[in-house]
Structures are given as C-alpha cells and as structure tokens.
Amino acid sequence: MVGITQSKRSNSSLTIDGKIQGCNYIITLDTGASHSVINSAIVKETFDPLIGAWFRTATGEESVIKAKIMRNISISVVSMKHAFLVADIMDEVTLGMDFIAKHGFVLDMKKQVLQYANVALPLTMGYDRQAEVLQVVVQRQQKIPPNSEAIVWAKATQEIRLSKIWVVEPSKECTKDNIIIGQAVVSPIKCGY
Image (cartoon, rainbow, N blue to C red; front, side, top):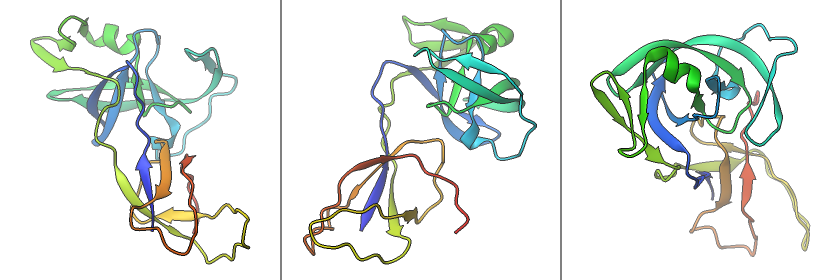
C-alpha cells in the first residue's frame, strides 16, 4: 500500500482558512501582491482565456493570467464577492492588496489578525496544519526487472484537490517483497481513466 500526503510548506506566509464558492481553502494573504489570484486547478468551469496577460511572481518568474472571474469568498462570518485573476500558482488562493483596499480590511501584525469592521479574523503563520493522508492504488500491474526502477502510475482512492502538492511514500505496513518505494513529490493531474 502506498500513501499520498499533502506536502506541508513551512514558511512565514500569513494564511487564513476560508471558503471560495462554499469550498474550504487555505487562503494566503500577500501584501506584496497587487491582485488576488486563484489557482487555475480549483476553477471548475471553462472560461475564455486572456490573450497576452501575465504577471511577475515574487520570485521574478512570469505567470500567464488565464482569466478574471468573480467569486464568493467567506472568511469566518465575513462574506463578499471579489474579482480574482486565474493563474497557475503554488497557493490555492492568494488575497492581494486589491482585496484588502476594496473591502476595507486592516492588517494588524502585532495581534496577527485581519480586521473587518468589528470582526477580528485570526491569521496563521505558515502552513502548520495537519496534513491530509490518502491512499493511492497502482493503475495496472507492471513487471519491474530486478535491480531496476520504474515510474508507476497510481490513482488516489478519494477525490483530491488538484491545486495541492503531494508526497507519495510507502505506508508503514508496506515492507514486503524487497521492493523499495521512494518518496516522490507530485502534482496530481486530471485523467480520463
């Protein structure tokens, strides 16, 4: 048996739990971002692509903007609509200064809260949440010759969010047959199986 675990990033990003269109996500607050961005992997419907639109990430890389969409966002008891850019980003959702300024949020770093009217929304530093653990199964049987290695396609037994980075590794019960399963960092893909 092989397990797949959500990769945990340990950094100093400010995050908050929230909902986009009623689905739970980890939302990253980025005061260095001019716009709010939603990961293209979590946008279900098709959209007309924006031609020639791009932005520069904090690491200096260029990323294509695929669309601009309106979404309902809820953080605790606070709910509103906001326009998001759609792009391939590492985070699930990033709230930029456009969101903070448009809706009148105030960031209090001393208290580590995002203030909205009389509501204080607590922020988390980094991604130290409990990791999700799922099982994956091999798609088809494959013979692997002795003293060799192979890439084997597997499928998660539960639905997983495509926007996350995962680590595939053997479960603690998988120690038979002298087969070594190495850890692998993976980005899930949609498939038609």
